[in-house]
Length: 301
Length: 258
Image (cartoon, each protein chain N blue to C red):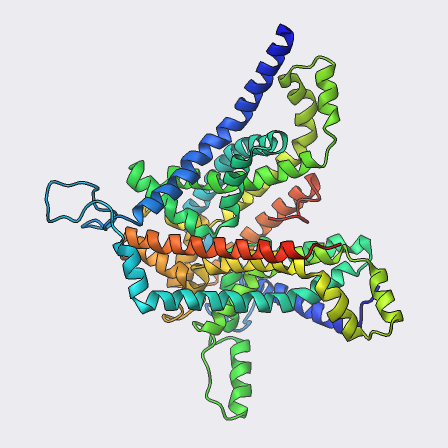
């Protein structure tokens, strides 16, 4: 009996020893900062940036907690506009990624088993280079001196259209977003397509379905769970992205991420920056919830 | 297997889209011209410029130091987290480990900035970057270790215990050797994530300290020269080596999530 108790005590001790270091670390450096950010969104900005003190003897200094930042967020049209624009950019990026990822994922899934790993690796490899390098590469391609820009403007000129500036435009931002996030769509899609039973397509063919019908009525519906998880993996990081609009976009191409960055580093209005971050968090949670609901509805049989 | 010519053509076009931009970066790092516009002739010039760039070398040293130290700590904590998540079904810990991985990076960056300055009163620099990098790397290591454990038969651990092994002995002689490939893959992943990280470093670095990505960012924003291409090419080589190593230790890591 005492042997048994000693054992269960040592099991509990092990559990505590293994779990507590990562638990405490993340409690301190993930949970606490998130909680501070929620709190900060209800504070007043400090005189010299940062946060105002919670209590102060001088009655002229704004102090305590307030809903002011949230009121401001909803009263200024510009913030809702930037949020809406970010949603549209994220949606368009996700759709383009889907259209581009599908043939790749389908080809890999229908290739012989031996070559699949290599083909997947080839999708991931460019993704392993530094994020900034991948964005920078499009600065070169879309730059006004580059062959690609000259070609595009040559074609436009021949059609009698005024030349366009490709870099520092919404177009450049979209290209960068798609380029950086494409593998996030290919991988879950491939994982799903790989599991499809090829005899389903044979059956559809025997029943008289042509290639088009086989795709839209068999392959595509079955791949929806893969599409939903890929879409979440693309949509969420795009929604919070600040570096790509910062590097490839013009002054008018600000997204939520740029607003947040500006509040924290330039304007130094931390309560409002926190409010924007909380709104972004809520948006992300909504997306996750939606993806989970849509994905959960049809399980791949 | 239905792989029509249209499918091939579309897929190859996408592969080209993935590789062409990076190829251009590498090729222009050898181009004898200040502009990344036309091929003029071959030169090592930009690599010489790079080796004489003290700020860049200092940034590289910082990046390397941060990547090595943060990946060591993150590997230790992440391995513990992975084991705890697998063995104890510790829901709260699982949530705390996975959320930072799934959220947009900027959120972790700004909340840590707030926390370091407002609560810890810490001067931003190497220490704050290190803490931030450990925080976002733990989840990746934990996921890899947990995946390895999930693929194993738990009865071997029970067998070890039945034969009288203490929890420590079970870990030392059974669990650890079995999860070692995943631990190494996790460490390499944490190293790569750290040395590549831009967003979270951007918010937690302060003004005094530069890392390689921060330096690249300011060069891209202010004055682009093919020196950026040269440092990019070298960085790609380094990451490529890491990927190849990681894939040797845990081949299935690459197929899962990053």
